[in-house]
Image (cartoon, rainbow, N blue to C red):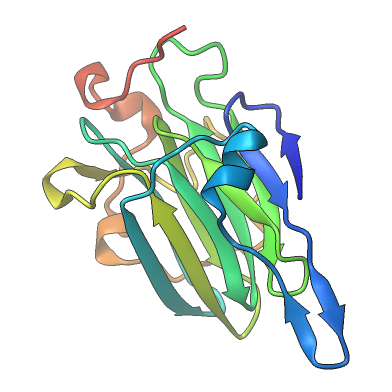
Length: 185
């Protein structure tokens, strides 16, 4: 397994070892001991899977005051996955990192607590997995606009299909500070 740091501290791109032969392949998607030894010592309490079709964009979502760290990957298909630092006071506040996650590259992205997360589907469909460090709390969930001009995310699609919640999302500058997580040095 190879874990790569990204320009956003705490956001990790994970490239698991894949063992393949004529029968197919095998890989570990989570092994607490191995991930802890590699520097990702998290307790996950909830697993989620979503199925989406091409052109769907889910996000950018976050929870506060019950933030979720997420270990995500595309089990089938291909997505462009994005993490945005929304921690008030962070030196990287408002910066984003994106990565292609696919059934072919088997990459995972760890998005820590205090970051907004979203992805868009590039293949005909995508089966997407999330391991979360806290439980889903709808009363603490917020949506950040996917096309916030201050963030300048270069999504690989122009006119995504959005949920009603994501259509009415706010730009980062319009969130009251008390709704945002706070950076702790």
